Image 1 (cartoon, rainbow, N blue to C red):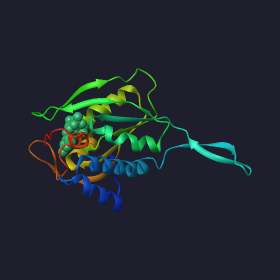
Image 2 (image 1 turned 90 degrees about the vertical axis):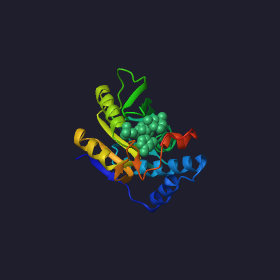
Image 3 (image 1 turned 180 degrees about the vertical axis):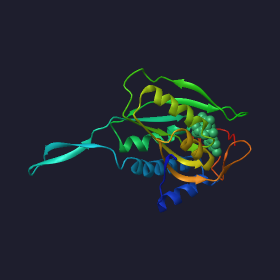
Image 4 (image 1 turned 60 degrees about the vertical axis):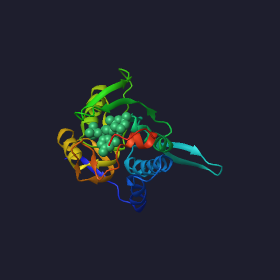
Length: 211
Ligand SMILES: O=P(O)(O)OC[C@H]1O[C@H](OP(=O)(O)OP(=O)(O)O)[C@H](O)[C@@H]1O
Ligand SMILES: O=c1cc[nH]c(=O)[nH]1
Ligand SMILES: [Mg+2]
């Protein structure tokens, strides 16, 4: 089993309600995605390693603690872009590495179209951000790519994941940690999450809905 953390908080319920509602306009949808991502981000960073640093306050010397890991934020284009700013707000020194994928509408299989990861400099921890984990095909491709790059640890932050998608990640990548705001039971005949929220990318960027 993968390590699945469904983050529970009344604010998660509140903002999820907004993003699931088809009547929520794009500006409010984006704002709710931002808030949900920040709450997930706090949960996904609680155990990051720190090292002591001697500092001098205006009063005296003391020891503070600073992060000792190199974190890379990996948004899956396009929809993952909506989650980058709140995670960068929490981790201002993180690098951001973009990977571009879209699902073929007929087969629901992911198609890669952007990948500029270098050969070296893999971060210790990759925080993959994508609001939706449906069949798990896109995240499968991304996890394999990050493992080839040499990332030590992969954490995936998704707002809504389907149970079949979670089962797939757990079976194929038992070391990957998943942080999700909701787990929905199923996919429809077009591989959209039910009840879900429709196409996250289209709702963030106000482009015609596929779902
Ligand atoms: O788990 P899967 O079945 O692979 O589906 C999930 C993927 O589908 C969506 O992206 P989409 O293909 O709609 O691209 P977009 O972000 O450009 O809208 C979503 O943001 C995920 O990347
Ligand atoms: O329900 C879904 C499935 C894939 N991608 C989305 O944006 N929504
Ligand atoms: Mg989309």
